[in-house]
Figure 1 (cartoon, rainbow, N blue to C red):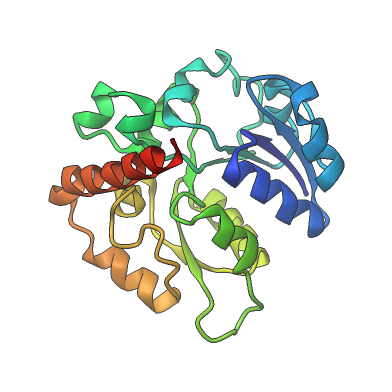
Figure 2 (figure 1 turned 180 degrees about the vertical axis):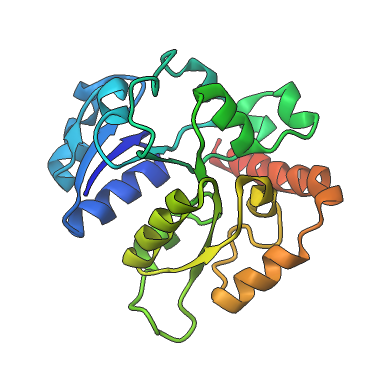
Length: 232
């Protein structure tokens, strides 16, 4: 499969490493240009390209950039991309990193906001797992305690394609419903960054309470704030 990745941070770089090893043809881009990705391209075999080229790379395109950077994507980036191309959003909103985004503070779901900005339906996936777990914890199907990942979004056939990619990476894919249900895996929710198995993911998704989203966000934001302070 040909896969485009927009964003070469922890998740983007990890997906490039994993997918190239599985035999996929990966095209990766960032905001600074292909020349800044030469080392990653050499290491993984992925092809360093422009953002526009990554968007038109193939069957799946992953947008894996900070929320604050989504409005800065080229206008009309997906205008000429075929409708059957699956767009995955791995993003998470952290005010300490992204600044305040009024629509999200007012309750718009993170991936619904992304879909609106880029003008395309998106599938929310790979947002609730640490990159190290994504890199190291994939196991064969049927392995006891196999880590599971929720996948939410529309249309259903796009969601099904992402679920297959999740399984291929060594995780149980959990169908978390349409994009309107994606709030259940936003930062701070019960399923976020806990590496649960399939039973645990389903339980955590069910336990999430929409009325507590501001609380979930606050807790996750404070956690990232402490992490940033520890890096100083």
